[in-house]
Image (cartoon, rainbow, N blue to C red; front, side):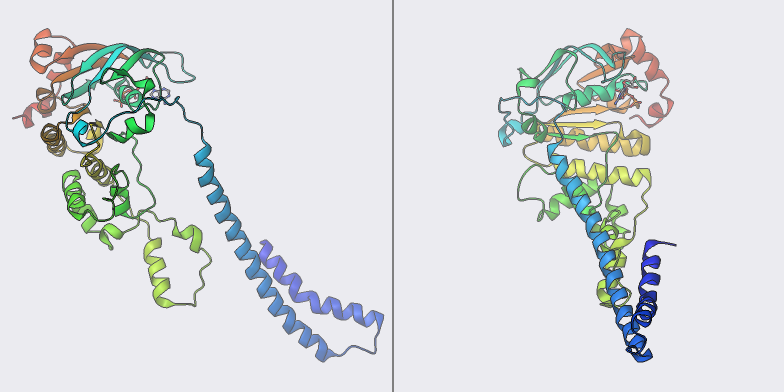
Amino acid sequence: MDKDRILEYVLQDLPYVMYCMQLARSPDSFSLASVALFQNVSRELSSKLLGLVDKQMSLSMTLSKIEELYSLETVPKAVLDGTEKFVNDEESASQGMEIEYKDVSFKYPGTKANAIEDVSFKLEKGQTLVIVGINGSGKSTLLKLLNRLYDPSSGTISIDGIPMKSLLVDELRASTAMHHQSFSLYPLSLRENITMGATDEGLVENNEERLAQAMSFGGSEAVIKKQPEGLGTFYNSPITLHMSSISNKGDQAFRKKVQEVRKTIEFSAGERQRIALSRLFYRTASNRIRLVCVDEPSASLDPKIEYSLFERLRSLSISQGKTLIYVTHRFGYLTKRADLILVMKDGKLVEQGKHAELLALGGEYADLYSLQAEAFMLDD
Ligand SMILES: Nc1ncnc2c1ncn2[C@@H]1O[C@H](COP(=O)(O)OP(=O)(O)OP(=O)(O)O)[C@@H](O)[C@H]1O
């Protein structure tokens, strides 16, 4: 039996307890009518107290969630912030970002082996880099270091010739649009899920054209269209947390709205990917973004869709002068268009160059390339 029921029983029996006690103390002064009255009052009291307990519990749950949110502010940064300003205005965004890794090695905290070892390469402003290699070869790690989620264990990464560690992290991140493999969708409306990444001000609310383009480029138009509230549909809304005690009576229209919002959406992995990619395009359209990074969206996208995604990103990057880094398992179409290809193996950069140069080498790239039968079929 739960504690609410126990409390209810105790309060219901209270009049009889009082009656017996009073009877023992002064048998003449107590009537059955007063017991009935007392019972009515205690029933009222019981329901009020139960309501109060209910409210207090949902209030304390809400307060502890709020406390958790505020505690996020005090989570220490995993990397030390730099002091140098990083220019990310409209003019610099149209020039892209120069990136240089010099003898960079990195070991994840608590692990023994290096995830990447002695990696050196240079990417000029506005160029397209494609990183390839088998699973676990260190491709994602290269991007994580570039976003300063971690710092190299040794070696240096420079941006526009400045050591990355000396730049202000927030400004550097504000100039980068990054789609990680482990992206998240948040318990907000689909509109907010797409527009939340914008780094420029004043555009989040009212830029329908930019939003429509992001949905179209990211391939989420059809996914959003079939949702009951379109862009206003909540993705696994947190409303159940706060509205759990809403009564069955009350305003019908309000209850209907709450029920709509409470519905959870089931998205396939590919559909989730398309929403997240639309977020990337929305952010990329900002005039502060100088670098666009995409980490292997191929797992949930078929080859044709991945090619068109890459092509859109590439033409956007070229027309707007942004630097583009694309991590993929698929060769051919993508790598042929890259200014630079990095081939990773066991954490090492084993080959780098352009498609034709690497094919001529007859090494790792040529081996992997020859295994990509489906890429040949779809290649132009
Ligand atoms: N958070 C982590 N903690 C410890 N080790 C990690 C972590 N993330 C990755 N690694 C290890 O670092 C190495 C490189 O991983 P990384 O994810 O960079 O490879 P990848 O080439 O991107 O792989 P995939 O193609 O599977 O995405 C692997 O050995 C991996 O197990």
